[in-house]
Amino acid sequence: MNTTGIELGKSRSDCSAAQLDLLLTFVSAVQNIPGDIVEVGSWKCGASIMMASAAPHKYVFAFDLFGGLPYGEGKGFENFASADWDEILAATKPFRNLHLLRGQHETTVPTFASFGKPISLIFLDSDHYSSHHTTLLSLCPLLSKGGLIVFHDWTFPEVQKAVSEICKPEDYQMLGLQVTSQAEINLGNTPPPTGLVNLEYFAGRMWGSTNNLLWASTGPETISGAALRGNLLNMGALRRL
Image: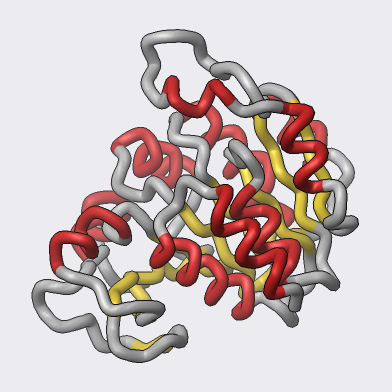
């Protein structure tokens, strides 16, 4: 594990420190799951640098325009248009297991999927319905048993729509995310205490029941209720059965 690379990646990401620590927990959880790591929506490659440093034996494939807006002005998230391609190339060059795939996700992701490479973790941070739908449709068949799909923007209606259309409850366990005092992921069937992050609502809304809900908890740092709602509530994850 390259700790310097992990810190560099964190410094370049738009994700909160708590979100990145949670993502590192998921990367650790798939270390022995066959397949590489894919990030769709990479901006300045902060999370992808971090993941490449945490899992040097796996390839990390980062998908983005790396400058510009995929769906034009007025669709939101205009602040991500300012990425500098040449700067990103220079920053990622030392990480030989990190590969950048530049272009519209609706083109680059299906092309990548056509090579049939197994995947252990998909990190989706692309905000929009079309990108999520394309990615899930193309890459879910390549996700290894026990592999994870991690969503940075889980609570967005567009994300929920794409997940409900592609990911079926008989194929996945939904991971509920909460913050505890333990700096590790714990899997179990007991829901978290009232007031912590609870994905049961979203499971019921998307799949009509919570039978496939699995709970995960992590405590990378002490966080207030307000910070918790702002920093972690958007995240969700599915585990391939």
